[in-house]
Amino acid sequence: FGLLTIVAVFVLGWRFFNPFTGIVAAYLVSINVELTVHSATALTESLLVLLVVLAWFAMVYALEHKEQWWSWVLAGVLVALAYLAKGSGQLMAFAFLISAFLIYRLQLFKGKSLWLFLLAYVVTVSPLWVFNTVHYGSPNFNYAISHQMWMKSWSEWHPDDTDNLPTAFSYIK
Image 1 (tube, rainbow, N blue to C red):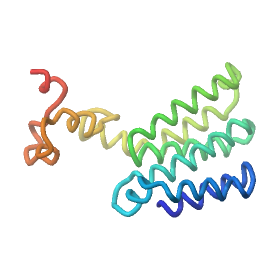
Image 2 (spheres, rainbow, N blue to C red):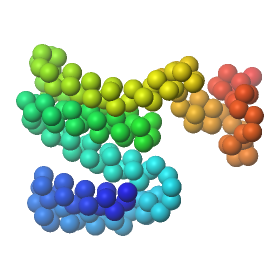
Image 3 (cartoon, one colour):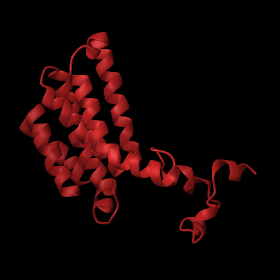
């Protein structure tokens, strides 16, 4: 995914600015040590970076072209995919909605663009929300936040006994 991220940054930099900007941006991304390391391993970070780049530019395009409903749908799907790659991707949805409201104020709610963004987002993430609700009792369940951050040592990170995982309440006791 790292190579795709470099290509996406180049194309988007070229398209939104100029070829030189695309080349410089792609070069800077290509020498990023963290992206290089994560791209060589089976971690979701490199996929998340690619999806964040694509979602960011889709969101900017959608905000600049409010009447083009398909751009809002694309932004919703890409933001949702970023969330599915890693839970922190969900923050992009909040940032986009706040930005859209600041730009369009109450006019935002009158058109179909906002509702199409939200529909695309919800439809894309709904399989995860249903799974989490059925299996964990919460649509926003996240193992790292619910349990992992409350573990006292590295040896607990992959426990054999999943019935007694630590939580914020058990950590306080």
